Length: 146
Image: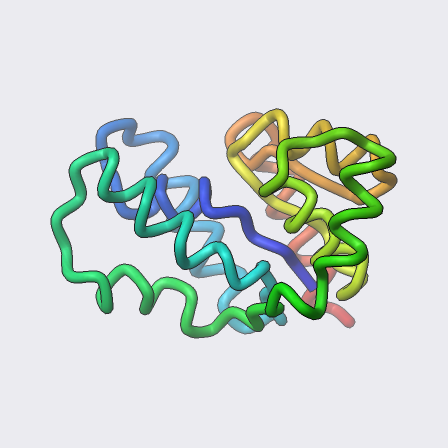
């Protein structure tokens, strides 16, 4: 089971940095048959970041990127996110991703170093896709065996 951060989706829709784009797209193709999780707020984050970066596609097209995700609602993760915030002191959005990983017993994959570091501090197995691409892809193959 994998919690995917919005940074992976953003890299998969923008080809400005070819390495980031190719690694994100390759990763998403490899994990499409695994259980994928994210806090529901990923949809808001996705729209906000995409618009801020100038992506003009319709909102529904962007939201299709998370249609295969199991999205956890705030009421499911709020108390745990609050606990994570109190213990780890991450960014608020990171507390939601970390709480999602804890509740679903998932690893986290992101292209956000701070989220990866905060997740590891919380005891979550977390990977930075760009910097640890080969390790991530091996871990994905291991997850597919179970």
